[in-house]
Image 1 (cartoon, rainbow, N blue to C red):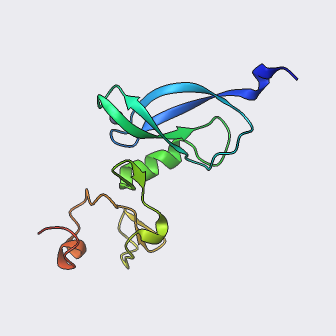
Image 2: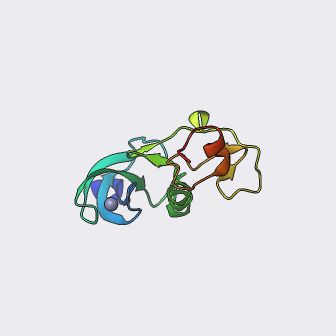
Length: 121
Ligand SMILES: [Zn+2]
């Protein structure tokens, strides 16, 4: 049982620009929740931003990050919990996941949100 076996490389993706900033060796075995967020310097954004950790194995992969990032789940570097997402009855909307609006950062000019005063008209 060498120590090297305990080290796995994680990729870190910026929650602001969506690009991969860096890869870091991480000790295996220490539990972190899937999609763990870590503050790192993003050389694309030129500032410290939360990054989503993607491990070679585990419950959160690059597709999951893309889904969250493209939909707009990250607000100020934080992943908005599902319980805090707005409910929405438009099942055909691309931002709708199980009746919740994943566009938490309001990047999409939704006419319902305008109507409800959630975003400016
Ligand atoms: Zn960035």
